[in-house]
Length: 199
Image (cartoon, rainbow, N blue to C red; front, side):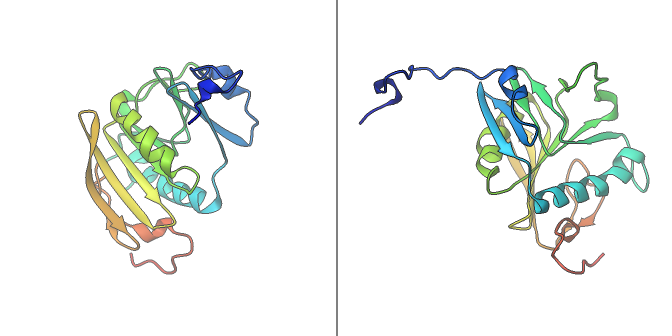
């Protein structure tokens, strides 16, 4: 059996990617650095984008603006996070107001309190197997994984360096999940082709 070390011109250690490698990617590509490895993915598809946008709109009024909810949060779509040497772009990120970083550059270095990843066929393994453990190590308290194809939302809470599954919501279920449990919303609002949603 051959290994990379058996192939001429391939060293035993992969070259660690740098931020310069990420910046050099074409504009239509979403780049992330995880454990020194560069991941370059195409921009998300429409189901992914619609689910992410709908969720941001649902949470924004009560938790960012305090309209019908407690306020006290800053919520952003696709912020660039620099967590130690890792550079990540979650679909949504939220900080409690008192922890929200006053940025002095193009990215954020304060660990969010909540993150949401919207899964797609090209990102599911990366989000679950690489990013989720990294988020736990970094100290993110809550993560939601939204899967438009399966029409599910999984809510997790950090326990040490791992995660505890709080709840899984499917299809048209009513969602009430930490850290936004002050709001109940029909999950079907995230699915553009789900038909009428009971409110």
